[in-house]
Length: 305
Ligand code: F6P
Image 1: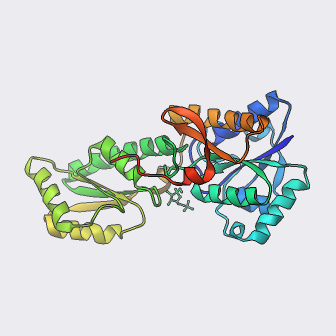
Image 2: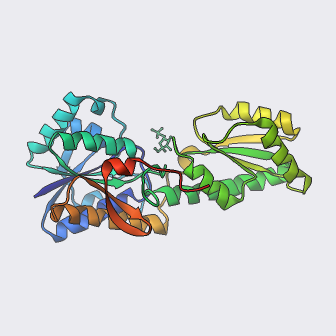
Image 3: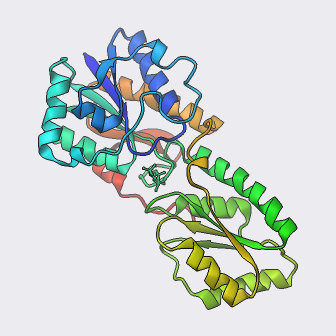
């Protein structure tokens, strides 16, 4: 048996631990593990080679992915999916572990249709898969919280509010969770009606009880943050700053939770293939590490209010 592993989509903290877990298990079971550099792009371009300890040792606790990631538009086309399969088959590899988010899981489904055996591991900061958390979400939330704590030091000195945009793509989970943790005055996500009068009313209420640096957390990519802040200033008559957090959330060392989670996902992915269980996603659900139909794992609902 030969297994390949790739990381795909946006990198997330804990991916390297998943790689290390898979390598440790494969080595213990005398199985050859192959790395695919640059996710699905590398699968198309045949960047597939033996994965050994020199690839990961010393980097397992780092953020990012030691074997790199990519977003591949080519992979959406059947002809490139077929090339990817041929590249694996030419090395007698029939098993693949995909660590990534929902786009990566969809790519895995395409490969399964072409006859490959795949295990999907939820690696993304977005928390948009049907598991308790995706790998990296906890670390990204902690990074966001600590960055915003710093911002609040400044806005409390200036005497200004701030609207901070956090990642999450289509999911408002990161915004809601970070907002809760920071006791934000307001959290704006795609599923919130944007009513400037109402938001201003809430902010003014906090200002009236002595809050001097009101915090608004905003889910990314659905409003123009600068326009939003201008309107909030107009409606509240209070100074507001804006800040997009970006990669500060996604980079950096994984939290304890994501280290343990990442490693156990990597180990379990190899174990499942060894037990001849293929074409499922694995992750923690209700605190247990479980397998799940890949399609089902794509149906994720918001976990935070
Ligand atoms: O999917 C993870 C994520 O960090 C999203 O939260 C964000 O929208 C996106 O990736 C950014 O993608 P990129 O790194 O390709 O710009």
